[in-house]
Image 1 (cartoon, helix red, strand yellow):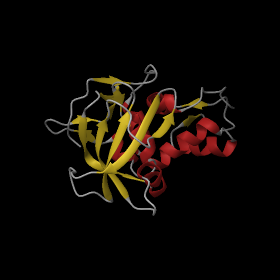
Image 2 (cartoon, one colour):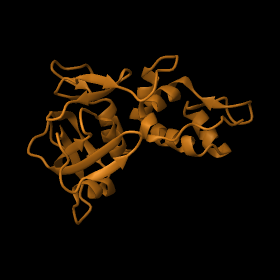
Image 3 (cartoon, rainbow, N blue to C red):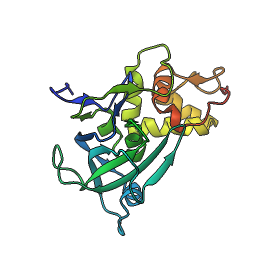
Length: 214
């Protein structure tokens, strides 16, 4: 997708878009949330399909916010929104984020998994970021491969599984999906360069990596 004038990527190889307190950005396209995740954020009594069409960075915390405690701490909530860039797949909501200052938009990715992953990674906002932020230095290799992994729900879920589970079965699937090399039984293994670029962008949500497995 070519970038439209006045639109900015949610995430690039340089990192996540960072918005200042008070910023309100429309998402292109709206991001569909898994129904259970929507229940956590919006407090609906039934499992409704919810689409995030707007992201708002709050200057101070609101009521009944959801605490997402990673290496960075985020407070989140969702409320009905009245605008969207295109007809959404669910009930239109805005995501409200409080960080005590400027906020990066990485929480939107984890909230959307697996349903809305591609919309976040390939999508845009209509507010220019004040900066780009990534939780770890860039490894060697082509960084675009990391975005391709994060945009693919199957590969993204397999990558997250590999962080916690380096069983032979998990490593074999990782090898088939281009996340792990070499395949089990062929020598000591490690994440591929593309997988390392993907992990770099979500490192603040993950534990420190343990030793590689053979």
